[in-house]
Length: 208
Image (cartoon, rainbow, N blue to C red):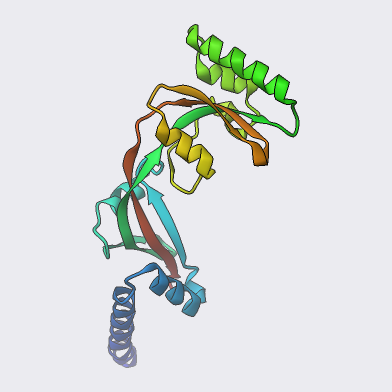
C-alpha cells in the first residue's frame, strides 16, 4: 500500500517536471536562445549543429529535413533520450569546382606556370582533370581529384569565389592570389545551386 501511495505521489511530480521541460524547449526560437539554454543546462551536453542536404545522407538527417522550423524529434535508446529541435531552415547558394593548387612558397613562378600550361593542354587533349589533380595538386583534397565539394559563400577566399561565379560550367582557368602565394588551375564542374540546410539544437538526457 505504501509503495502504491509513493507511485501516486511521484507520478504527478514527473509529469509537472516534463511539462515544464517541454515549455522551456518550446520557448527556444533562435540560435541565441539555444546558446542560453545550453549554457544554463550544462548537464545535457547540448550542441548546435548544421545539416546540409547534400552532405548528410543518414536516416536521422532525412527525418530532420522533413520537419518544419520549430519541429522536434526525440530518439530514445536504453540509456538516453536525445532531443533535436529545428532552429532554422533555409536554402543557401553553393558552388562546386575541381582545382589544382600550387604553393608559391615552395615553387618558383616559372615552375608553377610551366605546370599550369601543361595541365590545361593535357585537359584539352582529353586527360581527366581529377587524375592531374591527384598528380600535381599540393592541396589536401588532391586524393579526391581536387573536388572542392559544395561550398557556400564565405568558405573560400573572396577572389576564389568571385572567379568561380564569373566563369561558366566546364570552363577551365587559372587564378593567382598573390598576397598569399596561392596559385590554381580551376575547372568549374557544376552550376551553382541552392542547397537546403537546417540548424539544429541537439542534447541528451540520461535516463534514471
